[in-house]
Length: 144
Image (cartoon, rainbow, N blue to C red):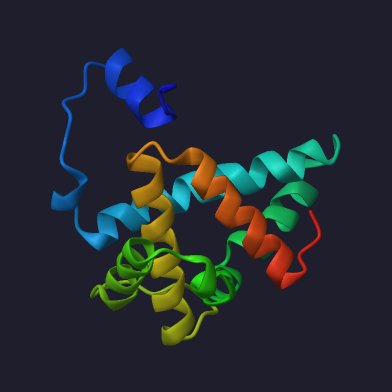
C-alpha cells in the first residue's frame, strides 16, 4: 500500500508513531480543519488563476462553520459506524472557543466534521477523505 501524506511526513521528519486513539477530538479537528482547507484550496485554485482575494472568498465560503456543519449532516448516511462515532465525539467535545458568525450548533457540527477529516488523514485514508468531500460537495450542490 502506498504511504499517505501523514506517514510520509512522519518518516521524513523522524516523528514518532502515535496511536491516534489517544488524540482528543479537538486535536483531530485541529488537523482536520487544515487538511480540509487544503483540499478546498486545491479545488478552487484548479478552477484557474485569479486574484488571491477572489480565491480566499471562494475558499472561505466552503470552509466556514456553517458549510462544514451542513456537510457533516449531508454525509451522515454515507458514514461507517466508526466514522459516525468520530464525528459524534468531535461534535460533543467541549471547546472553549467559538467561530465568528456561527451558531453553537453549527460550530459543534463543524468540529465533528473536522475531527472526522483529521481522523481519516492521520489514518492515511486520504482517498476516503476525498470521497467524502466529493460526496458532501455534490449533496450540498456546491459549485467547485
